[in-house]
Amino acid sequence: MVKRHLARLASPKTWPVQRKRIRFITRPLPGGHKFMLGLPIMTILRDLLKLGEGSREIRKILNFKQILVDGRRVKEPKFIAGLFDVIQIPDLKLSYRISINQKGKLYLCALNAEEANIKICRIVNKHILQGGKMNLTFHDGKNQIVKDSNYNVGDSVLFEFGKGIVKRIEMKKGATILLVGGKHIGVSGQIVDIIKKKIVPDEAIIKTKQEQFSTLKKYAYVIGEEKPLIKI
Image 1 (cartoon, one colour):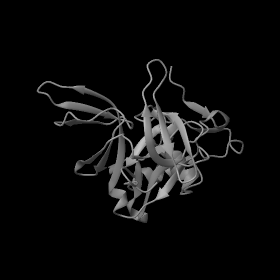
Image 2 (tube, rainbow, N blue to C red; image 1 turned 180 degrees about the vertical axis):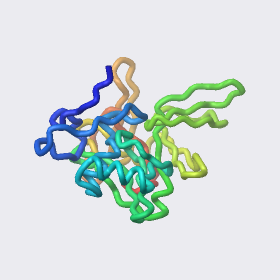
Image 3 (spheres, rainbow, N blue to C red; image 1 turned 90 degrees about the horizontal axis):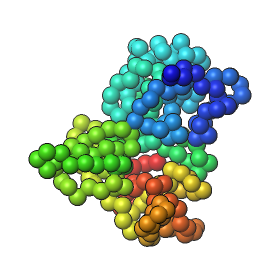
């Protein structure tokens, strides 16, 4: 049985919401993003952007105004938008990207028109189709069929809305990453080395301007080569 309610005190620690003022918060419908790295569009519009005080106001906005997530209109208030998704409100000329900060909280990064047209997606799975083509699955649940077989799990791709994949960003030494979990969550740096393990998960050595440390490779999302390709 699917739970319909979510207590604010029990909501993910990554959600930047007040937990004691109101008892319940919108529970997002299952979607491409994990709860830890996503927020219901109701919470984004009401609690973060302050576009309305109650759920009734937000429902009216969703019904009568264009609210776009990655270029597609969203009307469902429980729709989950997550890491690196681009949220646009054309009537207000507002565009944001969902990112995560060093306090471990999701936040909205304001974008200009050019930035609002691109997004980075991490490859989390791949499999070969008939004819030699490859189906890629990304961290946001979307899929893309490609002819090139050189894509690897852990790599990222740069999407341009309306065009598709415009660049592959390989997970390798020197790549720029954003950490989305662990002790150093929200930190951006460069990969110094990748350490393969047989039993325990692989590790990555990350270098920032202040320090060098190791973390789990799975926490590192590639966002550029020598520098980030998106604003975060």
